[in-house]
Amino acid sequence: MNAWLDPVYLLFLLLPLAALSGWLLGRGFTARSSGAKVTELSSNYFRGLNYLLNEQPDKAIEVFMKLAEFNRDTVETHLALGNLFRRRGEVDRAIRVHQHLVSRSNLSEGERTVALLELGEDYMRAGLLDRAEALFDDLVAMNAHAPSALRHLIAIYQHERDWHKAIDHARRLEAMTGESQAATIAQFYCELAEQSRHHGARAEARAYLEEAFASQPGCVRGFMISGYLHVEDGDWDSAVLAFEKAVDADVDFVPEILPPLLDSYARSGQMERAERFLRHVIERYHGISPVLALTHLFEQREGKKAAIEFLTEQLRQRPSVRGMMALIDATLDHATGEARENFLILRDLTRKLLEGRAMYRCSHCGFGAKAHHWQCPSCKSWGTVRPIHSVVNE
View 1: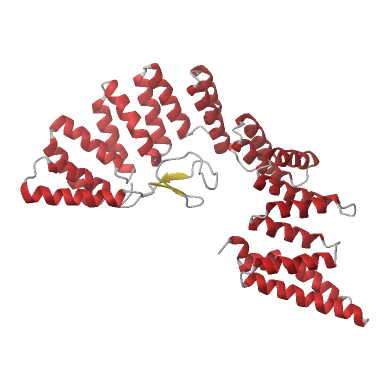
View 2: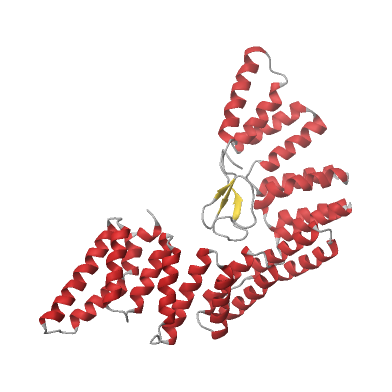
């Protein structure tokens, strides 16, 4: 069921209409005509609510529009209607309702700012970001619903990839509410660093990374970008140090960090250090990625038999489909006849188990993805997309 059709939400949303009905009933009208209007209003209200609860939104909206016409001064009724239209995807109708409210001369300042905030959200939903930005800027200047307006502005600047404005408004939000925006600001600086790096402006990228670390000293993404900058400079020792710091900052990002880190170990001739580091990571991280990396090192140094023995022992402690697939691949070279055919069948089955599986999940909204994203594509939270730890995943 859609969120806007949820009965609890709808009851809360339509409380203003119930209040209107109760207010009219409580006025003690004595005239028959007035009593008839009150009875009709109350009946229509409950009829409209019944339509909503029975998932007949078109009929419900028709009823509530008549209720709004009955008393044009009821701001809450129009706000509720506009909200319903927007949640239903009828953004044009929501805009008209809220524009009509804003144009009224008899609104209080508080009612007008609420209507402006709703209208700004309508514009955002419609993709009219320039209009939304102008409205939210006005609300911030008026210090009316400023935190909400600032959050919407930050969302707009993120969408437009205007990271400098996003940083400025995040700092204003932090100062206004006391809520730390350090991690988000660090991500914005990392976005700027990535842009500079891709354009070959490595000194500028490092300057942005300094700002990221000033905001969040343990910024794992900042350490990773720093590692890539050292790789591009051919400074393998510094790259190793940066990637190791990234793992220390947040071990959950091991699957993303290990490939460039292992390459840096190899290029700097530090494979003993690599083995020590991987053994240390295995104690802290319960996924399969560092086990597979260490298995590969054993195969290179001691041969396939030692690698198979190590991987087999690890799989007893941490069962993994990916690990099983690696074990099957390692034993195929020595298998013949019927045994080899069975291994091929098992490998095909394990591959099918992994196909199409989400390897990452957002801890904020539950969005699943095959690849890692620093910003969740669904809820737009930063740093919340992490590896899924299960037998079939990491």
